[in-house]
Length: 406
Image (cartoon, rainbow, N blue to C red; front, side, top):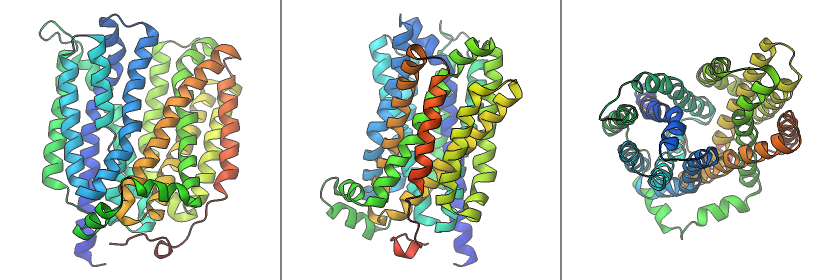
């Protein structure tokens, strides 16, 4: 690879990272205000939760579709479509007039936000196999930084009553961030799917690439493993506030600090740590290490006797989630045929999204019916199973699994 090729690839990757960050800031602005916004339309606590689930459901359902479509028309057009759709969803959110409309708009927003598999596929198209985990992790780190910055911006803007609504300015600002991301994507991101690959993908019948992926033992294993970390982490993340109130007497301030710590750990680990570890020990070992780390962090939470231990447990959980997610996406990209890479990664996003839906639901039931510490014990047990499952992953050279080097 020539120096000019390396520079061109680096520019594309960093342009995508910056675009993801800007677009995710808008999501971060909206997220903490949604419960209050839903209550404005008379939503009960249960319905407030369902509003959040509608977004996740949209992501899980449309992730495979966007990946499949990006194989046929290209990564850049799909990114432009979804970012434009996100912009429209924020504008509609700002002017929602009923709870029903709020559900529809949040589902639309989730469907449009289900483009991370396309971003991962774009990175995989142009990145060497040994660098994929690092660059995919940096994409996730950029999204995490947007989640950290967005709520702070949203909190500041929510105090401004514009047009009789304290929600109007934050939501229109979120739309503005998506507009900036759209301009950046148009100018900076280049297409990575060749005309030959598009034609090859179009020849495939329907969603046959998914059948092939599920029929292959290794991709099937990776897909099922992609379900597990979000299943455990999302469940714990949702009940932490309820658990910490009962176990530690924490209020909003203490939980705010705790979530800020988790966000900072997520950004730092994804951007700085995960890539070097993956190159040092390999993706399979990192998945095993990640599952063990997530399990240890989850188990440590109810056993902690000092708040410092809780913060250490959160670090272990974030390290585990980050390592598993980036490595699994990288390996899935390597096993997928280049002509169907977007669709297979989209299928992986659907499995992960299903985990994010099922995890909180089960954690809530276990928390209420068995005991406040039991969601942590169930999560640790799930990660023990994942540690053993990860040892069945067969990592081969990129040339042997059809990965494409730039």
